[in-house]
Image 1 (spheres, rainbow, N blue to C red):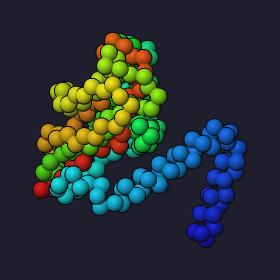
Image 2: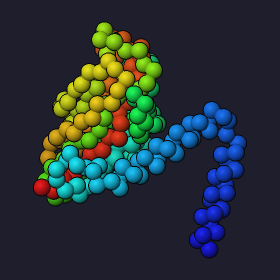
Image 3: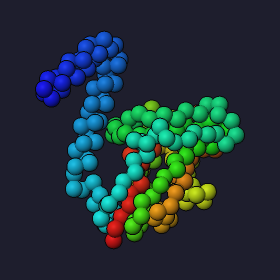
Image 4: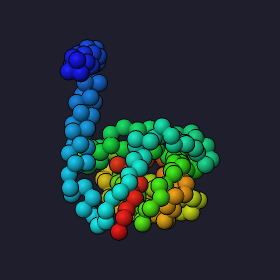
Length: 206
């Protein structure tokens, strides 16, 4: 019975796929490739090799994107925040797109209830600019992270590449942590195709 139900779901999905345009089929193919890659990464023992401690809890910011609050510090004109795969230097990753507004910052805020018994917390992510963006040293995009109102990390980018980071977070075991992902056009929002790749808060036991 379970097998028949599973086959029914596949048949329904195939009917929906058959109605897609050629452009949508290309995007679907890319996303399927990405999902397969994500599964392989998640099950790979090397995925946490740079953490160096036992991972006992993970809060995925992409999976919880719908619970995050979006805001602009000055004016939302030009701001775009969404969840979609992103390609930087030909490498596709699951990502949060956060094009900053013309003026001020784009802010994506998460309120996270951290479980008890966490010896340490870290934020694992990549900062990127999507392929096709024509940035330069005179037109950079700023990435920032605030935790509970305090600026914890910042980074400037002017190239369509991924930069990987593992940032130490305050020890807030059993408390509510407010994390803000921030992008800023620094006065020139053109081509600021900023993306956050695979952002996750991870709880560790030493």
